[in-house]
Every structure is written in C-alpha cells, then in structure tokens.
Length: 455
Image (tube, rainbow, N blue to C red; front, side, top):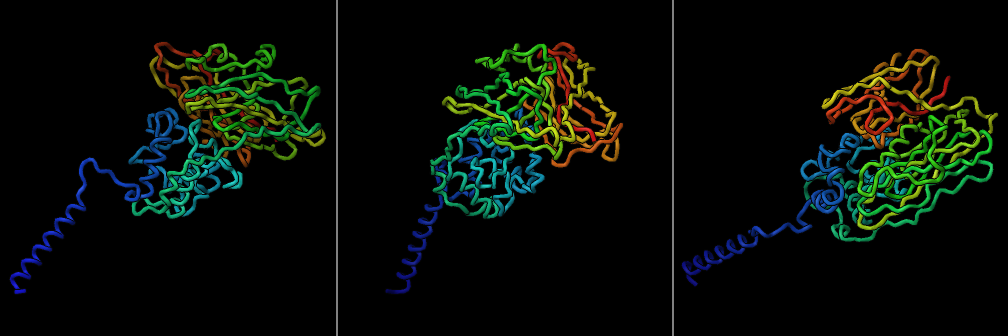
C-alpha cells in the first residue's frame, strides 16, 4: 500500500469516526435526560419535591397561606438553597441542633425526620406533623434515596450518589393505629374523639364536648395526646362561661361540606380557654415537679381535632388525651391558664394595623406555655416579654389564626412582679367596614393563652 492510499484511508477513517461521535452526542428536541444522567438532587426535585411538596397552599411559593409559618419554598430552582445548611423554623428542631438538611448527617436533618413517619428511626423524636400532611406517604425507597443523598454530603450537582432504583420502590410504611392506652385505674382519666371520616381532598375540623369523669377535684401533673396520621393538631379547651355550653358528645364541624364556615360552631369558639394540646401526632408533657392543674369535679372540656386529607380516598380521624393525676399532698404550685385579652381593637376598613397591649403581673410568675387566639383578619400574633433584663424579647410568633402554634418552654419564662407580656398583633382588614372586638366570626379577638404558676 503506497503512502497516498494510506493517507486517504486514514483521512476517511477519521471523518467517519468524527461523524459517529457527532451523532452520538447530538440529542433531538424530544430527547429527555435519563435518570442516570441527572444529579441526585435533580431526581429528588423531580420525583418527590415537585409532585408532593411544592404544591399550592404548601411549599410552592411565598404566596402560600402557610408560608409565614414554615418559611420554606420547595419549587424547582429555589429548593436546594432553601434546604441545605439552613436553620429550621421549628423551635424544637432548632434547639436540638438540626438543619433543614445537614450534609453528611441525615439524623440531624429535619427533612428526613419529616418524611419518615417511623419514629424508631430517630429515637422517638417528633418535630411537628409528618409530611406530606394529609397526602400519600412517600415510599420506603424514596425516603431511603433522600437519606443516602444527605449522608453522601447533599450535593447539588454531580453524579447520582444513591440507588436510582429506590425511586421505583412502591412499598409504603403502613402502621395500624393503636389508640392511646387509658391510664390505670386511680392514676388518671382518658377523653377521646371517636373515629370519624374525612372525605377525599377535604380538611375536617370538629369539636365535641366530653366529660372528664372525675367525681371530685383532681390534680393533673402530666398529659399525653395521640392522633392518627394526617392530623394537624389536637386541643382540649375549657370554657370561660360555664353556663353556656354545647351539648355533650355532639360533633360540631367548623366547616360545612362545601367548605364554608359553620357560623354556629365558630361562635362556640369564643367561649374557649386553652387547656392542653399538641401539633405532634404524639406528645407526653409533664409539668415541673410540684406543679399541677386543678380540674374541678364534674369537669367537661371541648375536644378539637383537625385532619387534612389530600388523597382520593376516605381517611379516618381519631384522637385521645390522657390526664394523669397526682395526690394533692405532692402539689406545691397550682398551674393556671393565661387568659390575657386585648379588647380595645379598632381595625380600619381596607387597612392593615398592628395593635399592642401589655399585661403587667402583680406577682412573680413562671410561664410554661404560650399559644394565641385571633379571628380571620389576624395576620401575625407576636408575644414579647415586658420589663426586666429581657424586655422586648420575642418569645412567641404565630401566623395562622385557625391553628396557632403551641409553644412549651423547656425553661419557664421567669417574670418578676411588675414585669409581664405584650401582645403585638397585626390585622389585615380586607373588608369595607371597620372591625372591633367581639364574639362573632365577623368581629376580632386578640388573646394570649398558656400556662403559668406563681413563684
């Protein structure tokens, strides 16, 4: 073979190789990336976050009604920077040193805790409601894919760091609900919201007045609450006016089947005083040693249960509360309920206004728990310490008027005589008439609820 022929063949071979390589690297407009060509986080976004989390009303944008509570947007393009290395808003998770996602540490990542309903994976810790709230639970494989991604450093780009086949796993953790076991005879009382249906794509919130069953005064130094999966919260309310009570054992829905407000039920809420509650599926709360609630003989409380069903099938709701008693001789401090109301409300038509009121205490107090109550114009409820070395410190914030946060302090807030609390409430009046304090759903309220005992 002469050199010319060799050169021509070499050139021809080179051209063919070039054309083949060009063809193998070219994609048409209809081609899509295979899962193996996507980074792990891209797969998490595509298979988990976008279809189940970044939905309207949840984590789609800052315009979601719940955004002020969680402050988390999981839409494509912003989810990663909203998650990785970011402190959670959940008070308990933040206190425990968690991040929303902590690279190389799934056990210290709130995202993993919220997706995994099996409490055994994180030594029983609970940080609010599991997610997606009221929706179809993630499969075991999806949760494991998230765990492997976190423990591999939670990279944003690069090769897949978890088994892609995990995303095809359809196995979902299903556990049979086991109601809270009632206290042993002589140690306490159980009250319950019996099993009820939640229709598909519906939120059901109801109230039912139930008797405690105590024939004499009792002292409660501990309570447990438990709810089925899909619950937003459970609260037991006492009544301010005992001469005006709902019928025993009736079920009173807050929303009608068409999702409109049930005015008669809303009116009964104006007579509520917070007694106990939780936004976690299970809670076991014990008062400080020597402190207890005094429950008078023949007491009854309004049990409030709220469930979210985002599935296409009927869900079941159910909840229990156990009140554990202690002998009177062991009680040195009676826990009392905070009921601090700002009745001087003047909210102009078509306007936003922030109203404050301070409540000074005539005796030293230790505040154990805080929650709030406002009506539908309430946009933000802030509680600050008034006076002393912590003057002006924010100790409570809630942005959900229907389902306010319930915050229990591991270290009680110690307030001296003359010190107290200040409510700072922002109302957004979108109506054409001025609104003032009142008992109906068209009026407004601004009440600090909680627990305290005097030093």
